Image 1 (cartoon, rainbow, N blue to C red):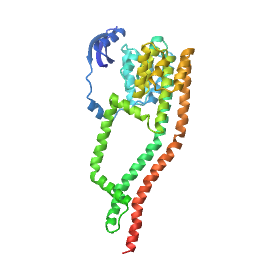
Image 2 (cartoon, helix red, strand yellow):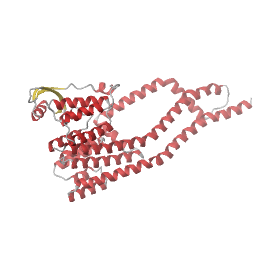
Image 3 (tube, helix red, strand yellow):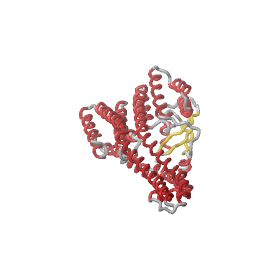
Image 4 (cartoon, one colour):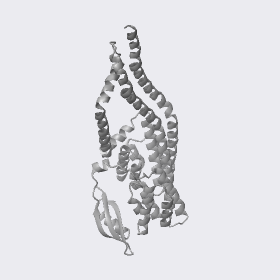
Amino acid sequence: MSQWFDFQARNNHGEMVHGSLEGDHAQAIANHLLQQQLTPITITPRRQENAWRRLLSIELVATKVTGKDLHLFCRQMYTMVRAGIPLTNALKRLSESVNNNTFKKVLLSIYDDIAAGHTLSNALQRHPKIFPSILQHIVSVGENTGRLDESFKQIGDYLELEVKTLGQLKSMTRYPIIVIVAIIVAVIIVNVFVIPAFVDLFKNFNAQLPLFTRFLIHVSDFILGFWWMILFAIIVSMIALRYVIQQPTGQRLWHYYKLKIPVVGPIIELILYARFARTLMMILKTGVPITDGIELVGRALGNAYYQEAVNQMSDIMASGENLTTAAQTVGVFPSMIIQMLMVGEESGQLDVTIEEVASFYEREIDYQVSKISDVLEPILLSIVGAMVLVLALGVFLPIWELGEAAQGR
């Protein structure tokens, strides 16, 4: 199992270099340092952070580095590297123009590492939470082939589409979330403020209250009497769910059942197909061997269930099978992807055919997202209508009956 090691080493000029690397053991780290022409002095395993402390930790000050930040970084690096500007100068300029304080610190750290003799890919590896593994790997390929500018261009194009896809996913879920939150707030207000105000009035009359009203009164009494227990249960459930999702098995199940959500699940699956094709296309165009790059494709999907399937593809290919057979064996991809992979491998133009697949699914995502409001709107309106009906019957029916009771006094 890989872990992080902190090291001290000296470069060819005798200068001390500090850093961190991920590896299976200290000897692997030492071998990597020697390949980078660094002489290791000390290599110590980093102390593992307590799981519960990591779970409950909340970063209040740090600003999150978004996909837009990475996209802009890759675009600017492509322009400057292509213009022949040294990496240290390029990073210095970018750090001065970046508004995100967290990203500014990261860029300055990378600048220091490169100035100390590290390669850019090695410096990026020290920030795995900021730079995804596929970005690190493709930058490394660009360094080794002398086409670093093209690597940044490919990553920039990839991230641009990722930002667009994420924006589509957010816009798709924004409307349902707003409606659901509004319903929850309305129910809380009625049960906490409206129903209790009517209870005393109802008690002054001997009329039998309707079933809906009695139900709402019981719900209101429960919320007012046990609100602290409800709040505690919600907080504990959220923490427990977050902990379970962080475990490999729990994360896989969570990602699997997300695909089964009505209306939304199929669109998430389309996004995964597009991301698979788009990432595979980038791997092929940058010259990464398919046997090495297929695992990077799995990590880039952002779905543990599909990542497991892609990892199985890697094992199948390692045994001598081609990409099409591996994709067909795992059984999670539609027939269109299988057929296009077959055509691409037989024609020797896999990058071209897989690009067509990516374009097809991106257009399909645009279409499905554009019509999702037409599908969700009647469902949400039905839910809202049902809630309004229950509240209306629970509040207004007794008022009518109380009026009749008052007239009969």
